[in-house]
Image (tube, rainbow, N blue to C red; front, side):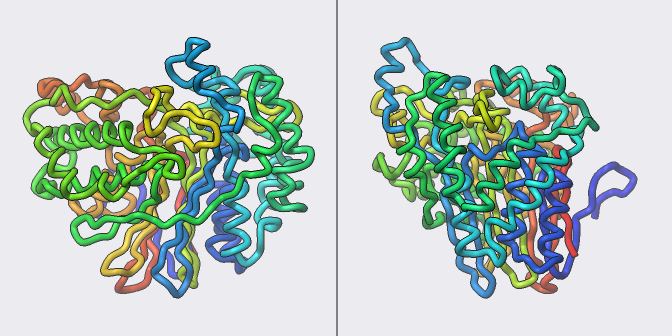
Length: 527
């Protein structure tokens, strides 16, 4: 039990249904859907569609989405990949000839096709009671009436608003200035786009005036995108991947996401007696850092789009590969050879989850990659372009080499957990590259240290990334000194590391128990 003398949150308990998001308005929207008879898919869609208004720095309609769905009456988990491809006229050779050694981040060339709306329609058609049109209604309302800017959103806007350029400044600045906490942000033109989706489904997004705005705006910015690229966007079902961690089955999505990286980290962590360590001690932080560097380096060498490249994902987190990597871990000193290869250290995403009274569970993640994506927006509707293409590499022959018609390596990963074959929990951790590490950290908090769902999310975080060990302010100066003495280059990040939500079902009582990360503005709600 938490110490009630100290500031924190309690887990949320409910009997009938529960939602959790990173923004209170989105959570309230989902709760209203469940109370009015919608199911978990209806709630998840309504929450997802309102979040581009509530947290425009983190997600948007021109982004991508992944989801795991457990239908009521079944323990089977279904995977959905809503990520888009590079345009057919894209050429990595031309980029290299132009002098690029890495993919650009804030140019039209980094914009891949938006897959989220296709994924939302797939979820609506196959799992929801009410359909996509009904899910659009709250987002239309808030886009027109506006939402108050909450403190964490204001922090992100202040730190990352300089990423906005061109027409995007007209849509995402207020009177030419970065919005502040308590000001009202409106996006009425996004409301128009949502009305097209409401009236015509995904076709109203991938065809007609919205498609014209997307393509013409990108062509004006120098992009190689074409209408045919948009017409062919189709979300798809994929078979989830899973591995056990101390008796629990961890369920992730396969590449082109990095769920396999989380599984590899957990299989490495399983070889150590973490429960004997201080959960907040330097020993645990050091071990996790060394393991994350190995897992992420392996990811950056091996993982790509399995539709284009030959990816043996099961070998990636196999016992043989784990045993080979274990020799590289020194529990008393930083191994300088365990270096993460270069990648884009972006931080922004939204994750949401819902479970209804019938037992349906949805774990969904939705992102435009960097904060405000490319920082560029479409001319007419002001929808931000994602820069997911900057997740490619320009290294010739690499599994994640940028190619026309290929999906880049994605960082965003929804998760679920099973115990003894039965559904146990939905979970996700936001924070860009941190997400695989975040999955491993939260699961370890729950299983190795017997934390409740809220404590597991609130607990201080660290992340070995790009040659430094990020250490949140929740860790003491003493811990920092110990880690430095082990060879870590310790930095205190300007923002907390990631976010997250968890909802688990207690197998004995059937109660739903939820938590929401205090690093964000959101909450878990139940009834």
